[in-house]
Image: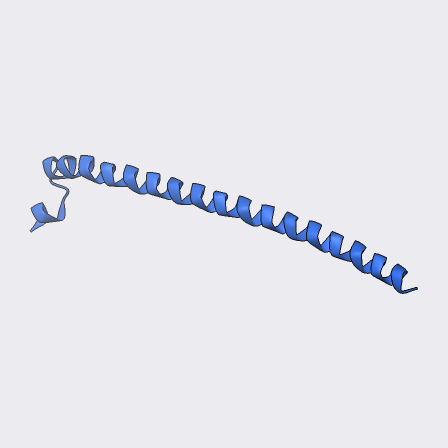
Length: 70
């Protein structure tokens, strides 16, 4: 009887181990997804920064900047 109970406990532990492995895989995937999103944000900020550099001379030339208004 104890042997049967131990077999059931072992089966449940095996299922728990399997679920833990699944959770580890999902967390790993989420980590890579987060890294990818951070890189995308850095790219967007870089593009916006370059746009500001390109727009400043245009605004000055068209007298649209705040410095030319005063």
